[in-house]
Image (cartoon, rainbow, N blue to C red; front, top):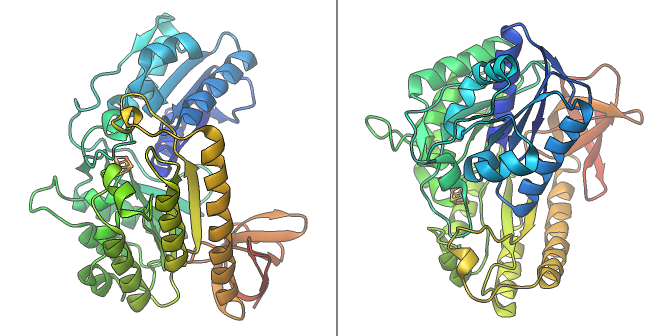
Length: 429
Ligand code: SF4
């Protein structure tokens, strides 16, 4: 069969799609691009925002337009949370729950053979231990995602993910080690440690392991690969975390600490478990132990009840943290969450104004961070070329462009000469 994939949302979804592509391919099926006619299309959906739902439906309609007789398999968090809507509005033949992703091949083959609707969605909390899927990619050996954890039990008031993914469960540490060894030996240049909430890693395992131990194991198991961490809850960063991990030179000095708001009242309303003082302590620790590191974050603007003063506090705090990059999300109401029924929802226009103001502040700190790298030599993992320039990322996860040829998948030392505030430009040494 010809199978095409479309992935929305987070790195965990990207990991799972990579794993599914590998599994389908090993079974003898052919993976084709999503814009080509295929026998089956697998859409790995996201429901973090209303936009995620809409994009998932659009992808489904595109697949049916390419081949009206195809088997349409919809999986991921939108499928898990709204299986009926996915069946009706996407025209799905298979709606696969998050607990059954590793069974998608079997379900797809069954749907092709029987032409019967299949839905495997159970409660998001009804799951077994960590559902293992192999890490790696069919698309070269540049960067591999390694999913070490699934689920979340933080129950932030705006988020549906705990209902879609269930409670946190972790890959056993020995399996983490062997997967990292395998990826390192396979020649991957970078391993991205991913999960829904990797800061919860290990709490469910015997002996209550910590994320710090897991990260150290990966750094040791794949010493030739750069190790990049996915998003961390700010309280994961402690003196012990920094002291343990700073000696690993293959750990990228890039830390994504979810902030969401720089106002303590709003953080409380969001049911986040830290305040701005604790967050700032994490930034200080990281900068002390990893000098020059990039700290990046996510920010939700226009949360219900966020006043002008609250938002001003957020902007002042964001400025103080001097982030290398901020992903800004206007608040998106998700029915079924506590925040959806809170008073004080802002209009679309008000949220857009706040997003623009935040982007202006964050743009300045990004520019300042990029300027701090001018004159330095960084190691760049090149990925693609466009208009005569190759581009790739440095350990700090800034985009670097340089002249060169046949650089895809190669690591090169680059002297940074300039920045335009968006990316860095340099010369390969
Ligand atoms: S930490 Fe909060 S925002 Fe992140 S997945 Fe868990 S509940 Fe959602």
